[in-house]
Image 1 (cartoon, rainbow, N blue to C red):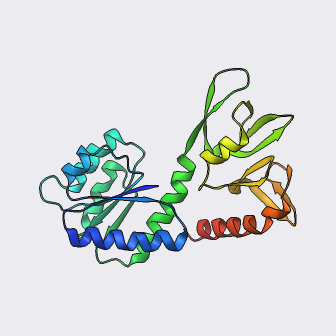
Image 2 (cartoon, one colour):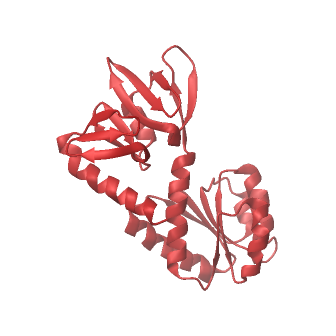
Length: 235
């Protein structure tokens, strides 16, 4: 995840950055933090932020105007406005603001924004896979229930279809790392969101499919799955 921090006051830039470092380490989230000292620096940058903490009241171009310009080149960015005055929240609809946080708010507000953004970005993630009969399919990660290898072919089970792909399960796993997917067996990659039941060394998916859970991966899978479900349940 690429997280931007744009505030013309160094004190608040550093404060938010330090809070984010603690939050990211606490939750085991990998992210690159990039700071901008004003709106123009943000707009002139080629950095594509996935999550942006943006001060509204800056000298020169304010955060609201900067946000409207920034989303023109980065439509998927999630913007968290930082403000000293709550009344600005009424104008945030213009750029579909993800969150509003006042500078006096507790750090838990920033943590909630980061964890919620992580879940939302997972669902927005897309991957391009080579289809067996030629061509490329663009699939939303959130639509993939599980990936299966059988007879040296990769089957991608989505909510609407089953695609046979030339992209290997190893390649798909690499693309989807740090998301809501786990390689439970060398032949199965599952999406946590479509798991119905976990019992010993077997996982039952929402569609009734029973998937084997590798003994050597069981402990780590349980830890990651429970952590994900706890995080999602507390958002």
